[in-house]
Image (cartoon, rainbow, N blue to C red; front, side, top):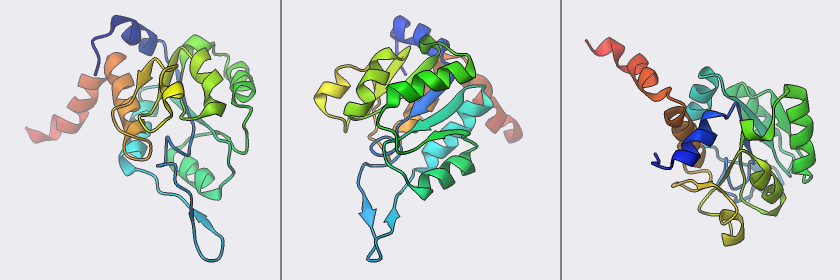
Length: 180
């Protein structure tokens, strides 16, 4: 994942991963059917990464500027309890969430891709962005994923956190134990 000791130390403190949706959990495109219904596509690999991260004791939350029933359905399917939709005041929401969970900024990783995400990226213990974000967002992040939003970016984050927190070998062993 990385050989950056500072990034690894920051990742070890993470107890909560907060994600934007459009451009991070999805490719950022908005798809509308002829009846006006909006649809979104989510990566199954991202979903598996979120499940693995939660199993390792790191909670996941969503803060998104848009409102969509698909986000609520996806979050429920992944066991994500903290979902905030229709909120462009993401730093305010993040502060309230930290108070609720009794966490500090250094204990969170935040991934976003646009201006409403800028303050949370800068305040988080581990600020993350995606390669499809504008330059001025990526430049503020501590880490930019290899894969773009909706195409495995969240899985990059989950796998990286699991590796840097020391959970990776045990995790792989659980999937290899039946091979003997």
